[in-house]
Amino acid sequence: QENFNKKLDVIRGKDSLVCPECGEGDHGNKMNRKPWCMKCHTVLIPRKMLEKSKKLPEIKFAPNALKNELHRLNPGLKPNNKEDK
Image (tube, rainbow, N blue to C red; front, side):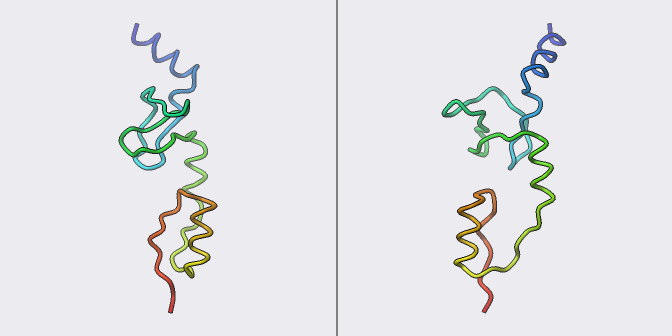
């Protein structure tokens, strides 16, 4: 029974979805019909997309306008950068 359920999870793609914040897999939770991590309150993404996002460079210093625009375009970026003076 357990092996059968694991095979079904692989077929349905449950193993391929992970949380971008904590890295946990899909537990079947949904919000607005999307896979959801209840621990981090974020949408789950495919594992391949997570690997690509880890390779993106991190912006350490940026003016506030640029920082806000980047955060608007990619909400996954942390808006804790300080402005250069």
